[in-house]
Length: 82
Image (cartoon, rainbow, N blue to C red; front, side, top):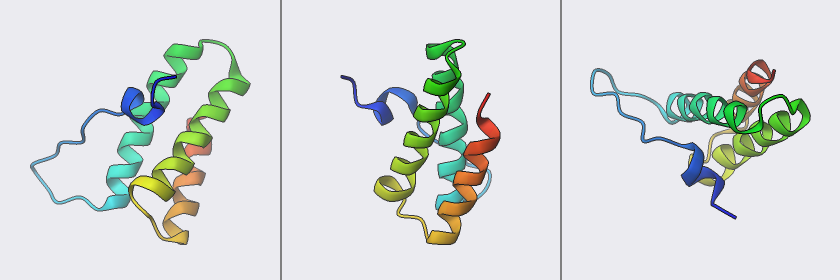
């Protein structure tokens, strides 16, 4: 199995302004959701599961967001569901 994060994420590049960890995490989650939706087509439960799992991994392993930021990112993930 391919590492999910390496497969779904693109490097975040924005030279115009300084970004916070939350903004970077949100951007990567948005990109990951687009790729997940392409990969799984019409399988809505699988899409939701992978978006939520990716969000969890971003929050805890990569950016170590605060609890408040994690809640915000999880709420944002819900808006990305089909």
